Length: 294
Image 1 (spheres, rainbow, N blue to C red):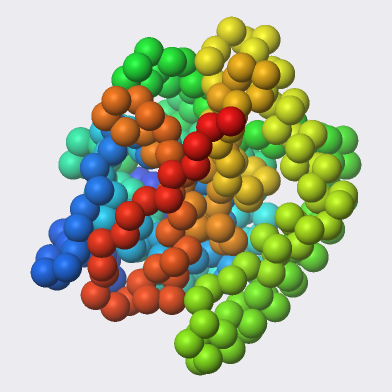
Image 2: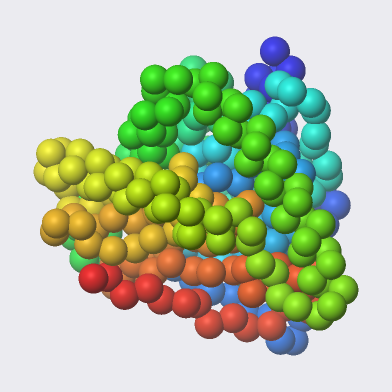
């Protein structure tokens, strides 16, 4: 299928000098952030909603020993409906491959939107290892179970057709959000996510998020690990649930967030949305926003 061919082509091409990619932050005000590990997920490359330029800016300014791609990197569902693959999306893939080539351990855990990649579990493409799940040990000795999280979504598992309907409605919300933020940008206002706002305000959505987090934490406890890192629900979070560290790295459609591990093992959620309206301008140092665990 077309999306399978695109996946193999994107991840096996030798990284060239793609347009828009600059390995080094060369501007006087630029600053790079160094972490032991970085987790990102739900990029949804192949959709108009993907904030590829903001993501490229993040990847340009962040370095790490380990980089985990926690699912829904390429949106096979959307590509099946209509083909959308601008240069910026190819630049993201090339940037990831370049990081792998320069020594970053890159691990890709497919999600439900790029489930076609699960047939390649155990393979390595351009230095990127494809795995179904992963156990990561932090610098302070904690074991974290890394999964995308769709296996804990009852809609995905029991009624996938409903999930596809919901995905279509979600795309409509994102389209509306793009128009809204285009207007906000002209008015000099910062980026704001309509879909994220609805997720936090609609009672059923809030309940779904809570149920998902509790279910993932329960399974992590059953597996005997100290914590779990996931994506899937596009809601960045870092907190303790009954003694288990629950971490969700968010997404690059709504929240523009990532999870990072510092050299001492401390975990932190980084919010990059404040830069979304100026990713093409000279980058200024950004202090990461730390979320304290409960």
